[in-house]
Length: 588
Image 1 (cartoon, helix red, strand yellow):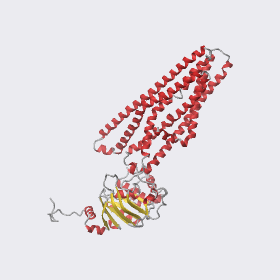
Image 2 (cartoon, rainbow, N blue to C red):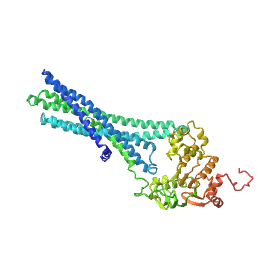
Image 3 (cartoon, rainbow, N blue to C red):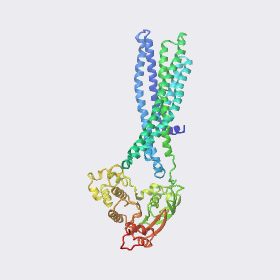
Image 4 (tube, rainbow, N blue to C red):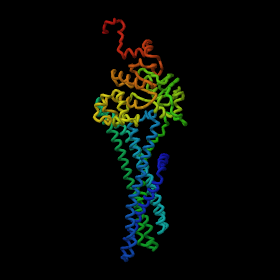
């Protein structure tokens, strides 16, 4: 019930449309009842061979209700679907806005295919909530009240009987169908999400599946989930069948009981015989208002499960706590880190342990170390992707937690080791960093990133498509395009996380030369395990298992003979001969 009430809260901005839809839906059902009643009266009265003048009102009534029924039904569908589409649009916007503060920390445990299912299929499931589960009960209440008033004109005893039949169908059968369909409806949503998540993963990893001949095993998993999903659909279809069958049973039983009470009233001259047919067909027509409630109950289970899956994500507390009264964006991006310690999970060893550094304006600092040393973690904390549990990070002399995260990111140029390119044009991907950049600025950024030759061969220049994830480009080209994108940001602080990881040595050296010129007045934090260009750094900090083990400039660290020197020697192929051999001998 709590989920239903929460879903109803999304209708507040559209209450006017909802009220109009219920009014038009009620008018459509009343027109159907009026059509059946006047038709029955016309046929019964005509059987007595009256003058044509006596039938004029009934004839006009049949035409009036027949035309109105079509008009009101069309307007009701138009209005209800307008509400529905506005609601779905509102839900998608709400869900995406709720996802943004959770990324990336709170979303790491979610499968990408499952998130895709929640944001598309689960929200689409809620399409049934208003059209099937909200409007029909409201319309049924209006119709029951109108029918009680109408039937009372014939005989008060018939009111209770008709209401009992309508309530038996509207509440009793609906509740029974709800209990029957609740399990299959929930299973349907959950199993569909599993299947979609598996399909997304298999499509993304298709190359690896083919390379290791695992396509058959993957197909078998898909088939098993498909069969399970099909069983849930069959159970769901059984619920639909029972809904229709029990609805017809309740309708006809009510009609029989009404006739059982009404026929004696005709014999006693308490009821005009002509009105017996009117009473019968009006009774049948009134069930049009409650008949959709069974299907509404059937769909309610899947709607609740879909909503619960959305709320499970949205209700997660963001990892990063936003300040209540954020400071204005920092004027200076002087970075200071003191005693920074961070763990991804309490039971895991620290990814960073008592890290300290000072990055003045215009200085370049390199953070080096083997993979897993904590370099990327440091970037994520500076960009406020994760909360800072222990230690302090200062920008412009103020705690970084006092600024809004978006204000920090707008003042930082970022190149990550995992490049994300969208399935669009070169221009579109570059405009993500600076939508106001003109074509000349875009081409300059491409040139600075060392992509002149690649760009000159593109058939459509900036309007050439890069493919999903940049699949039409090599890994090095994707990385350089990401650097070109970052160059379009006029940022005083730069965070470069393995910017040359996918580049060859010659291209890496050229890129370092270009960045040295372009960013000569900027503060740069260069995180890498490749030690080319380190002689240009003002300071080099060596991380190992999250701790600073060495720091100094290039000449000092190479002479110290520590971890940095060993990494430098290995990367520059300075191999010492094994113990017990002379420099001129080969090791056997």
